[in-house]
Length: 197
Image (cartoon, rainbow, N blue to C red; front, side):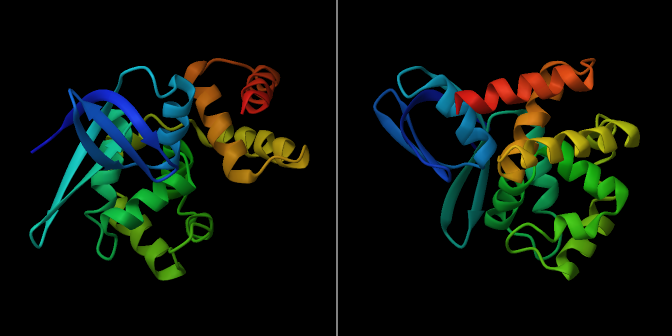
């Protein structure tokens, strides 16, 4: 069972990366968040990915994540009935972990249902079945006040012409980098990150 790989990305797309480990190429499925981190580093420097090895019907598929937290959340998602590894990857690509856990904590099925491939029934199941499974991960999610503040900042970025998913991801990264930052500092940091894309 492979749990971690470190190598040089030879080719990456928003869905996959070809990771070269001493001349052996591992084809790894990744969420968008990991793709953006790989793009920041570039394809000429080694990177490390936390790996979930999925075995089914004689096939092995590798799913890679920039953080161990994302890998753990992925594994919680695939434990939900009707959510396979490919859909779990799409879910993590559609919402940053903080937003996803916040939606689960608030019972926001409408927010979850905006992800491609997630209907109302699956969103309801996600909220119900993840309730007890992600307590430790959800404990790190900002308070409701912070979530409301974050929504205002996301709307501000959307009004400036950025896509919602891009705005949410960038803001989540800014909050993670500086959890004590004021709203105007988070907005400035997000705009600087978006300008570099």
